[in-house]
Length: 106
Image (cartoon, rainbow, N blue to C red; front, top):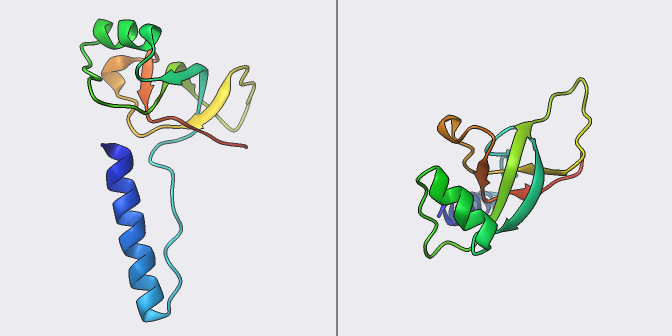
């Protein structure tokens, strides 16, 4: 759901910019970069188990899910997992799970 909204908003902004001749605004990451131990499909059994632990219903959602994610700081960037940006890391989920994680290069 989050990715659909961001795609629609970005598409509208690009269309408006093309119509007016001005460049589109820069696309920003919805959250700060994170380091995840693994990034799996939302349909994976491990993801379903973690989602159930935090009371998250992923039924009908097919997006990359980050497990065991922590923020990446500029100092001490020693991510041994996958560097990503995600749509929804909630404070209540701690570092257990993050939704719609897209790999990035820093």
